[in-house]
Image (cartoon, rainbow, N blue to C red; front, top):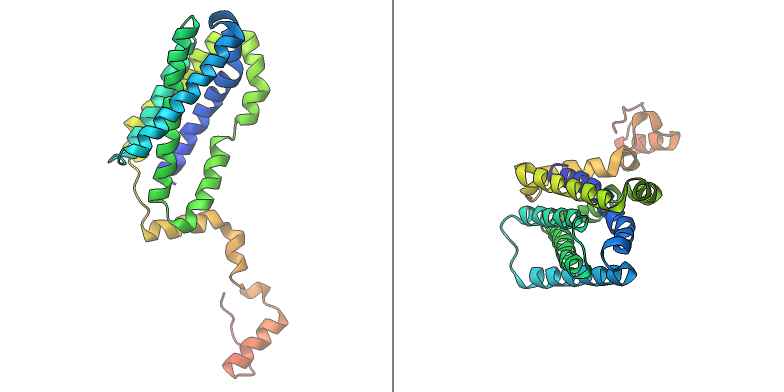
Length: 236
């Protein structure tokens, strides 16, 4: 799928680290570095505030010439913030990092969503969105199942650093490869080919009647249409 499939694959890996970091490693790190639960609550509030700021900025600024670059820049900011959580001490510093985390995460999400709306034909948008969510959160169960064990075994700080490194790497790949950050509209030929791939062979067969599956009644109907009582070759 070009830039769509490539971006979903990169975001899949990013989510694997980011969700583990945000849901499992951050609460543990807050106990030792950010003022326990009070500090963790302040971080969550900062993440939400950063997300709101990104949404306001996106809504009040024109779409950039290359929204893919902007989206991957958001992923880069998200990765940097995630890694920085593993380095800083104190509630104030963690709140500042949380602002960057929320801003980068929401910026990437909004640019990706609007990018799909602008470049994908309407008849395919629902299917692409379904593939997007499936691919992006494919590893979510593994993140929750094994993330806690990983945090307990190697420490929250190391998990935060590793998750941030994964996000930074994904963003660097996206920014470096033109085929990933240059989001282009689908032409009719590409859209048709993509639609066929998404629908799949099974759905295609529902709209066609292969010769081997024609029934007696199909055969007789064809004879009536041709006006010939002799056998006629049936084409799918």
